[in-house]
Length: 407
Length: 163
Image 1 (cartoon, rainbow over the protein chains, first blue to last red):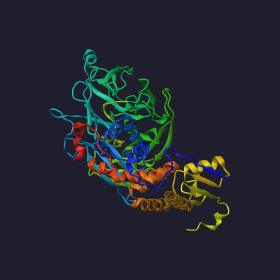
Image 2 (image 1 turned 30 degrees about the vertical axis):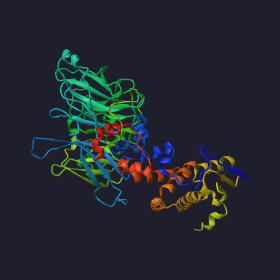
Image 3 (image 1 turned 180 degrees about the horizontal axis):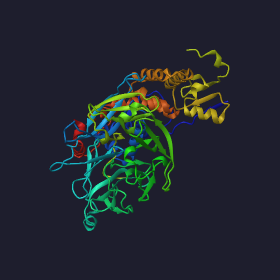
Image 4 (image 1 turned 90 degrees about the horizontal axis):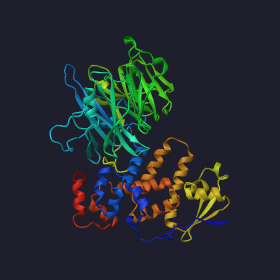
């Protein structure tokens, strides 16, 4: 019996000389998706049809998803951290793009990982005077730089791969702040992507120095404006001893709050805040000072993980089941790491399923390590002088995503 | 390269006929690396001769050569196979000229050889990654169709990318 695969409309292929420019548009796009943003910015001026393709927001999205899903020999991170020398009162803030590559050590024999650090260059953002930022968070290649004051300083969205930037409008809470009196400090914030709305959002919670109240607002990149959102959590915040940057997972931001001990979350699509209790053994209040532990939220296996460290020579890793706005979230203890070396480090984020990025707690020559939670093997990242509790990291992908928010 | 004697009893052979009449006898396990062939075998089952009017013999031969290497390497379940495949892929695309790349890409796409399309698009991407605009136009034989001044305008916006 005989069968035939139906011919293409283009007709049969023969051996005649062809050039790559004759490739169909879909294949040409597959090729361009594999190029880095700097090449693509240049190639916009090859011809009109390339310009149209490369400036189309849907191409930027495809490029982002392709880059994210691509298996790469190295891992790129956006890390913010501080360096403080012993006896030196000044902390130096760093915002770095870090490339970690263990491809030259497939057997995993070495005790260090090749690391390339590139400081974020903000000199390409034109501004009169000095731009001062106290925090930086990142999503899909866009970095959100923000001040710690609600009323002073600039908030900027910046894509270092395209050097595109945008200054955010002033807060919408200005009048409210003066009404209630002294709402000044940004206590918690989060920058992330709302899949349902196909929009980037920045949420911030502002606390008062004089009362136990807080107010909140959210910025939408698509509308380029702020709007106030309800937050009914008197006395919930007011503590700035923990990381103010929220961790975003599936459209929800999570922050750890120490008084009372719990997790605050914000759902970008419903605009609602909720509070989630910690895993039962840690849900005690107030926490005994002697057994004081550190809590770090991290993404693990596309879920929220809570890492509890600094207690009794161990790190506990709890994983939260997918949270859908219910008041009760359920936690599963994934692992307890009990080794002497784990209490010498503070967890930052998971690099892989079993690899945890940590900062050393030592006073001298502090460094970052990648710690395997199963084998307990430590690998040095050769980033020195890190203040252990200052470090926040996220996976970084060079992207074409525009800060001007066209959908 | 001869296949191992233990599998020959169960391996079915397929005949693939190219647009120019050239036929290839291939093991089913090799040909089904191509999604389109795999679908045909699964759906229609019994056919032993498959006509491929869109691919000529020269390029079908190359596509099947690639499939054979990958099928062989994957049967010896060994971790080193990934490395062997990578090395072989590199050799396979090393000296391909534009015409061959064009025809192979069209053939691989037509036959839904996803992995091979990946390999070839990656190869073309590596050829143009660091190039200047003029070099791209030269490579792809594209003529600029911008109005006077338009191109300069675009260049000005991202002048750093042209440095």
